[in-house]
Image (cartoon, rainbow, N blue to C red; front, side):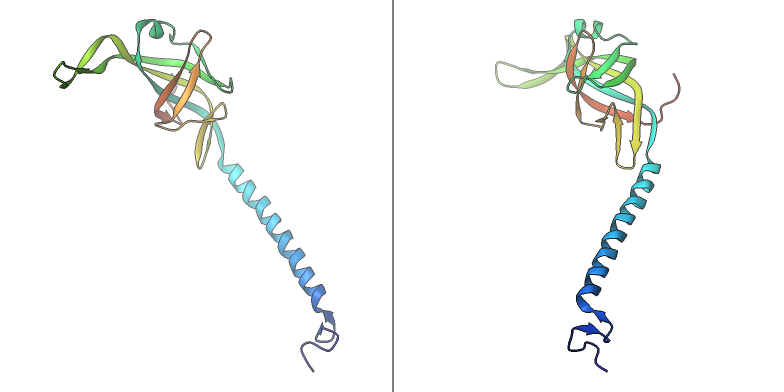
Length: 167
């Protein structure tokens, strides 16, 4: 008995074309079933949490610092998404580079400009590959456009804490 007969049937019983179609349908169904199971596994690893982001504004003047007191609500400038409240601030003199008449460079502390660190605490979401606040990924070194009711400026993220202690 031949494996494929003259009519193209496998062992004289199953049409070869029908067998290929059945295998393709089973493979597609298995792939979508696996995607559903894998998506549920990833979803269970995600969690809502409280996130603290420390951002650097540099250099700024005193009037900018006065516009950002603790307790101020902070939003994303582009999407208007709520990021959280300012819970801590720190002001240090900005280091400026000066150029002398001979072209030499030197650094000194500015008397009018400051580096201002702002810590924003708010609701966030943690997954295996990202931490987000208001749908915005927060990563160290990334620029975020902060805004408040009276102020807006890009800031650089210098620290992200997914599980900050209670304040």
